[in-house]
Image (cartoon, rainbow, N blue to C red):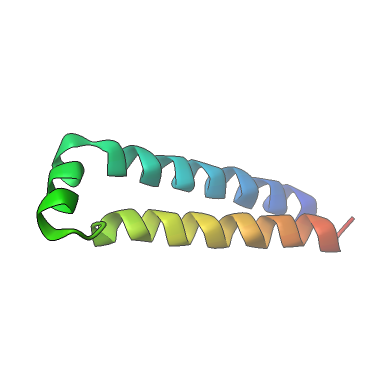
Length: 65
């Protein structure tokens, strides 16, 4: 069961990282980034959440072999 949860976290983390990248490439986010010079907070939320989920999933697989 723990291995399954780890795999789900890895999958979810990868999806969140992809969605964050996809969101950053959209025209409105690119425009906000050019005007303000900063990446919008919404994109960072996807990146951070996805990264944490991915790391926890990998750690879970490594620990519960």
